Length: 224
Image (cartoon, rainbow, N blue to C red; front, side, top):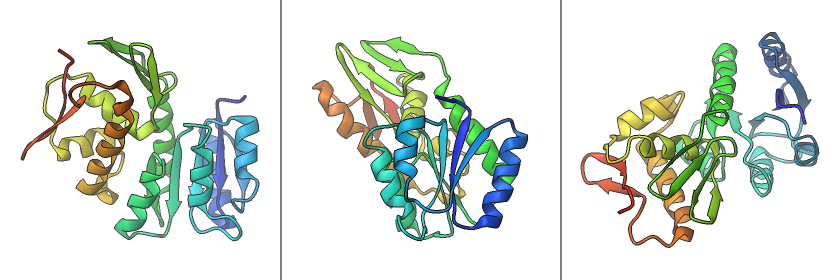
């Protein structure tokens, strides 16, 4: 496994060449696919660090690739696409993508997002109140039960958890969790919160770990 390999799935040769050039200048190794076909198998075998995934691909589209990768891996996935409608953003994030960049984009910004998503993977573990956060594998455990989160889910929960009982507004969450909130709406935050709550149901706790504060935002509810 090479922890510094970024997979680029992009059918536009010119865009792919520029992205590869910038990533190599930032000391990343790259693997380029001009179609979604073969990506899932390669990722399963080689376990790269991150995937840059276009949606509009000739044979196998990006949403299908993302869904299949999420069946066995929580590798960070950044969707890159010309689709800008909110429904496309929500669909992409709800199937497990961690970030979303709309074309045309700044390649320097894209590389910065790659680095930011990988930094999330290296944060030190936190533990309290019976809940343990495992930054090395993007998971949360309670007693003997452990669940895996996507990178963006982990970052959102870790923000609330690390500041127990502090209420964060949606605007603050946008600023602190999402790299470019110009393409993210309040509905997307609410969607991630719903996904987290669904996953946390396996802990069989009496109260939700994430509490909604009407008109204010969200907070981590410490276990009593």
